Length: 439
Image (cartoon, helix red, strand yellow):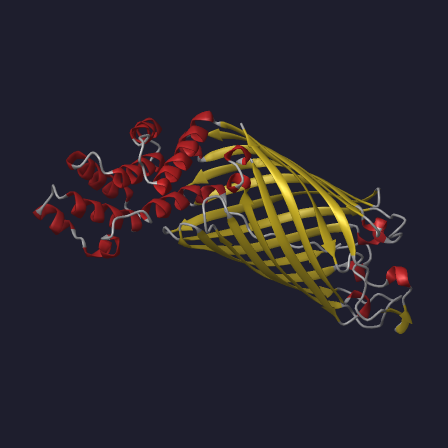
C-alpha cells in the first residue's frame, strides 16, 4: 500500500526558535538597521532606549542572548511602558530558563489596548511557560472526514498485467476504480518534561486511523500505532530515541505488524537553520490475507537512514528538505528493494493558527531480483508524490469553536515502473474536522 508522506513537522526543540523571530517581527521601524548599532554607540549614549533596543535585537539575531538581555533591561529601565521590548525580554527570560521572571514580565503585559499581534504572541509565550511549569503534558485530537480517490485500488494505468512477460487484460474489478471513504482519526500523546524550559522529556503516543470505502471494500483500512521514547537536550543537539509498534488491518484482516526502534539527532545552526539525522529499523511481519495470499513473502526487516535540513526565513514560515536511504529485506528476494528518496516541504502560517502546507517527494526503488511469475526483467519504480493542505481553526465562525479545526487537502501520486503491473496514478482530495484538546 502506498501512502502520501505528510510534510515534516517542526521538532519540539525548534519551538523557542519560532518565538524570537516572531517577536522580532514586531520591532520598531528602525529594525532594518540593527546591524549598524555598535557597542561604541551604546557607550556614547547608554540611556538612549531606541539605540539600546536596536542593539538588543542585533545581538539576539546574532545569537548573543545575554548581551541582548542586558540591553533590553536598559531599555525597560528608561522606558518601562515599551511593550515590544518587554515581550522580547520575557521570551529571552524563558529561553534562559528564568521562568518566574518571564511570568512576571508577561503579567505586566496583561493590559487593555495592547496591539492584537503582540497580545497573541504574549498568549502563546504564556502558554509555553505554563507547559514548562506543568512538566506533564497531555494532548489529543479526534477527527472525522471523508476522502475521494480517482484510483482507490491502485489499478495499473495500462489496464493490463504481465504474467510470464505476456500482457493480460484486466477485469473491471482490477481496473482503476474511483471511490469515496469515510475517515476517522484519533491521537493522544503524553509527555513528561524534565528540567526547566522543557528541554528533555519522556513521551508516549497512540494513534488510530480508519478508512471505510463505499465501493472498494477490499481496501477498508484500520491502523493502530504506538510510540514511546525520550528526548534529551545536550550540547551537540537534541537526541531522541524510541520504539514503535504498528498494526495494520486490510479488509478486516491483519495484514501487517511492525515493531522497531529509531534514533535521531537534531541541532540548531544559528537562528534560522537546523539539521537533523535519523536511523530507524523496523521488522515488517506481513500476513497472508484473502486479498493478498502471498503477502507473507514480503516479511522481513527494513532500515531507513535520513538526513534533513530546516530553514526558517521568517516567523511564520519553514522550509524542509530530507534525503532518505532505505534497505528492505524480504523472504522472497523479488520483494526486497533499495530505495532512495528526496523530499521537500513548506509550511506557512499566513494568519494566527491558520496553516498552509505543501510537500513533494520522489522515491526510486530497485528490486533485488526479478519476479519469475511476472517478468524476466527486475522491477524498478519511480514514485512521485505531492500534496497541499490548508487548515484553520473555526474561530472565524465563533470564538467558542477555538478547539475545532477544519482542513482540506489534495494529494497526487504517480508510479512509473518498468513493469506495467506497478505503473499507476491517483488523485485524492479530502477534508476533515478535528477537535483538539490539551491538559
